[in-house]
Length: 176
Image 1: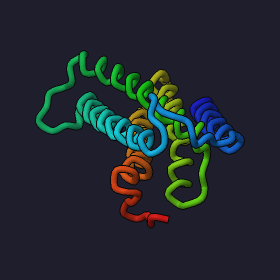
Image 2 (image 1 turned 135 degrees about the horizontal axis):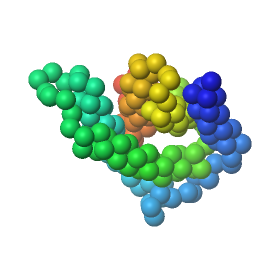
Image 3 (image 1 turned 30 degrees about the vertical axis):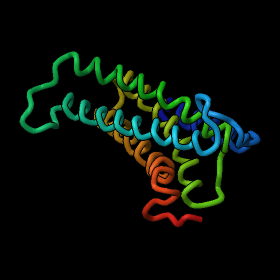
C-alpha cells in the first residue's frame, strides 16, 4: 500500500504546489535568466538524460540482460546507486526552476504533458526507493519502476529540452 500512497502523495503535492504557486518568470538558474536559463536547463536536462541511459545500461548489466557479458561485479551496483543519487541531485535545480518559474502549465499539449510528467517523475522516484528497499514486493516491480524513471526523464527531455534546443519545435508538437 505504501508503494502506491507515498509516491502518489509526492506527485500530488508537487502538482498542488505548482497550481497554487504564482509563477515568477524572472527567476534565474545559476545566474542565468530568460532564454539563457532555458538553454542552461536544456543542457542540464540533456546531461540528465545521458545519466538515465547509463543507469539503464548498468541495470541491464546487473540483471544479466546484456548479451555477451558476465555478471556485473559489485562496483557496478555501487556505481548504479551512486549515479542514481547524483542524478536525483542533478535534477533538483532543473525541477525547482520549472516549478517556481512556470508552475503547472496547461496552455498547450506539450506544456501539459511536461508538467504532469514532472510531477509523476518524483512520484516514480519515491516508488523506486520503496521497491528497492522491499523484499516482499514482486521481483518484476523494481525493473518496472526503474524503466518508468528512464521513460519519465526521456519524456521530460523530449517535451522541454529538445523543444528548446530545436528552436521551440519538437516532432509531434506544433510551435503554438
